[in-house]
Image (tube, rainbow, N blue to C red; front, side, top):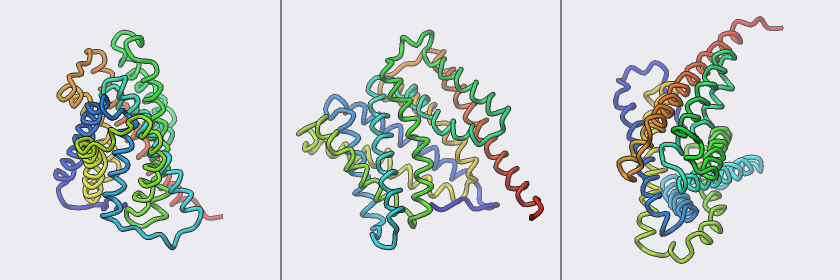
Length: 301
């Protein structure tokens, strides 16, 4: 992945718009997937999303097979499994929970990573704030939320944290998007039996295939391309903070496209989780910068 250029003089406004556009595409894609659940099922949609994403990436990147160790391919295998599990659990949660609630719970995964790398005292503050925000999602009681849906969303959160770690390992071993392309292939293969069992012959319908391709384009291809371009002008910390807006955009998409209305306490919970995410990300960035300065001035020997 191309990293952000330090001190870039170009205005960050276009890059910010690209990141927000990518988030909107993701949530619109998720909304389309939800609308297709009665026809193809959540796991059928996972197969369509990963399958078409793999085909698009293979066509664009034309990745090489040679020049990599067994350990590199093992990392690709793990990454592909994590992709399949993360998307599967996310869609299974979407079948039972509102889009905004699902994304808010899922964002706890990267939030936990940010807290783990942040300052000790403030990390506890952000963790407590995030917990309070998620608790508020019940809008007056957890009995309003499907327990199995919450479990699926928490599983997706854990997989998202593993996704971040796995993508870093694969990104270091493979050039450009080659590792992601092969991981998408692995993910599609992992999702294949579950998708076939869930959707059956529906997967062969031209209209379902076309909409599945649209979901893949909106949920994976376009957002990743937008993010890749944006990271050339945005600092990584600014990019991460923008990504924390995902729960709010998901809640708006759920309201506008799916008719999912949230109670005021649930809206407050989403806002609190976003604030905790921003604080944790900023704290992790300061802590990392502090460690780099300490290492630079530490005497040798």
